[in-house]
Length: 453
Image 1 (tube, rainbow, N blue to C red):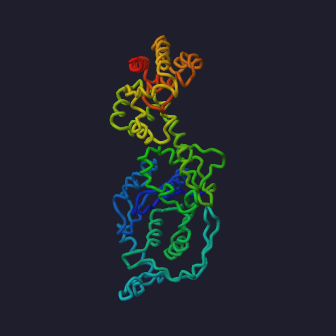
Image 2: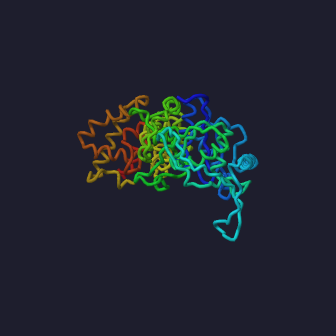
Image 3: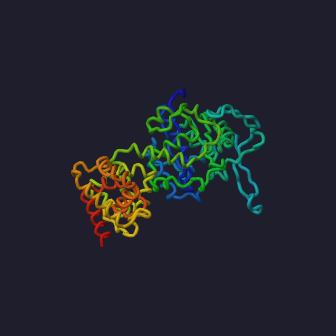
């Protein structure tokens, strides 16, 4: 159990769009801090001034907000390394004055004709052992590092130096980051010791890998986090999934809310081996969270992804819209699936009478006259159902015996096709129940008239 107040940090570099790997790192830091009642702080490591852009910083902020991850310094001026030059310079001057660092005039590696003045940390030549909360004790022989470059000049510190100073000034107690930073830790500990800083606790979490165990790339799903938002994934589902990438609750549980994750998160259950990104698992979790949404939240999100015509119908025809919810819950994996359904014409027929190709109404080799008879019989049966009883169960009970006797395909195919105008659609009982008795009978009578001509 950690002693004292816990302070973690999430320090992204705004040099690209916010992606899955960074989001998982942010989540683990956030869960650990919230589990222990501590703080998590946000800063931007933008020392790469050529590649750092304000739009990338905003993309990171948008992604974090969408996931529901708040930060304890969010209302303060954000920490940006590019704005802290005077702070870093004061610590560099302190090191030089103490003799722990020195200025070194050297030939530039990229241009031997140019001379540069570097700041180097004097090597102690010793071995360093630090305890990793995930991997146990790790030892480095720092003699091979030599005198580390900690600044390109007195006003231009390198990443390792800026990180050490920022973590100290922020009061960071726990550094939770990807295992690709393990080799950086020895360098940063040497700088901490030279400055007299207390060493934070370290936890290096496994990298996220593609299904082929290679580094996660765009072909595996390493797109911007906001792409998942724009495709209609639920933030709750993505948080749930990211938490399970490299962490286990200790039992077979898989579905978690953010509150439940805070309660159960423990660094001791973070695994050492790489975490495999599995899109099918993410989609399954998203479906589970989608099914748990209230009807109003589900419809609001669905409507947001619909084209204009369908969107208007969904807003204006409440009875049909509410009746569609069970169908959509079964058919949607992500909310952009609703847009695809609309684009394929699989929603409009619930609101508007379809244009029916009379030549396709009959089932297989069923004669046209027989199909006409089936539709007439079905219409007569359905007319007898009271309006308030016109539901899936009553419609099916009314038609089933006749369909069984005459052949389900011969009877039910033409009804379904007439109601939807599609060769693939939900069963006729469901469609009829959604559109209601009046629209059902109108469409059947229209088909009967067309067949009879």
